[in-house]
Image (cartoon, rainbow, N blue to C red; front, side, top):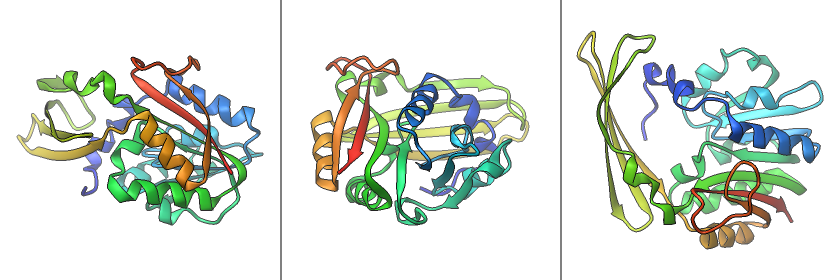
Amino acid sequence: MTDYDPRLVDVYDQDNPDGPDHDFYRGLADEVGARNVVDLGCGTGILTVTLASAARTVVGVDPSTSMIGFARNRPGAAQADWVVGDSRSIPGTGYDFAVMTGNVVQAIPGAAWSRTLRDLRQAMRHGGTLAFESRNPAVRGWDNWAFEDKRRDSLHGPMIERRTVSAPAPGVVKLQTSTTFAATGESIHETQLLAFRHRTTITRDLVEAGFAVEATYGDWIRTPFADDAPIMVFVCRAV
């Protein structure tokens, strides 16, 4: 995809606020004693900066220049390092904790998904922890994602949003979103393809890349995954 319009980046945290998902990842980082962390697909860095501390180095990596630009200017940004790129851009090796949050794994298509896992394994030390979540395709959450003429305020004035949803292929969901700025009439159109992978597929891909799945949860309070859970939260160990 092309990069995000900076005006949409300005409302990204409003749509993706800090919450129980971030609490889960922060708690896990503390549990495993993480000292060197990579947040792959960090977006605006809302979680990244809270993972950083005097005793912990954190790198935020994202392919969006506008997202990283926002991250570099948020409070606490100086405590982290920021990189524009994908898994091939992760600097150095020896990370003991890696995360991919906000269902970012679903935005990594096809062969790039397997490559991403291999890149992460190469960047991590033996025994390091990888954690991420993905939506459960069996629940078909996308059936409720379409909407029309949703109006809200932003730093750039009132915005009117519309989204259509389709499933052009098995395991693929297509989102087409239009945002119109009421003051100027200017519209921004975005298309995003999301990969919906089953638990067994993700587990197989992780094993092939050199990870062992230690737990799969169905929520942020660590309830063991059940087939009707809306999300799959994976906690893995580099072997």
